[in-house]
Amino acid sequence: MPQLQLPIFPGGMSLINANLGFVRDAQSLTYFYGNLPVFTHGVDDLRSFRMITSQFYINGSAKQAEICRAFGVSSISVKRYVKLYRQKGVAGFFEEPHRPEYNHGHNRFSQKHVLTLSSNTFQRLMLLAASVKAR
Image 1: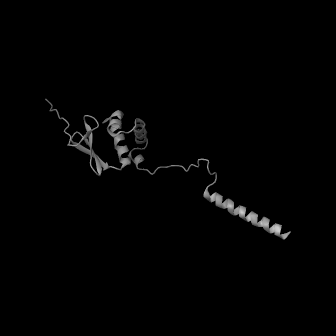
Image 2: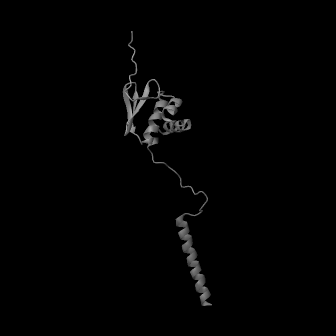
Image 3: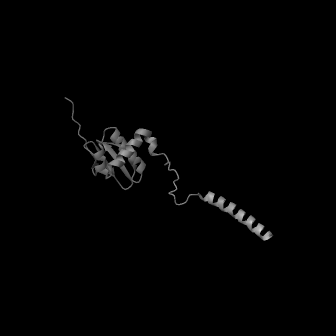
């Protein structure tokens, strides 16, 4: 007859579900599957948090609702990072963000264009002033 192995969690464990939990200390979060530590990251390392929780969901170790309940994150946030994991893998969490420069319509010209425009306008004004003076 096979032996039943119960998960034995360390003290201070916060459970995500019956098999998965985490321990938070001053500097880090450590995740446990049963009694085995599976991943550790710094408390402020949001990229690693998003990556590991996405892995837990994709691997079937935790449901979306369990992740939301355990960490107080929104379901749309979990969905967003699961999608990122499926599209780009682990590397997607550690890329630098590619945010296009967006000009909310407040200023139609960049600073460089304004300086060029101002320079050209100044030159025209100087020519105009010189021609008026010559008359």
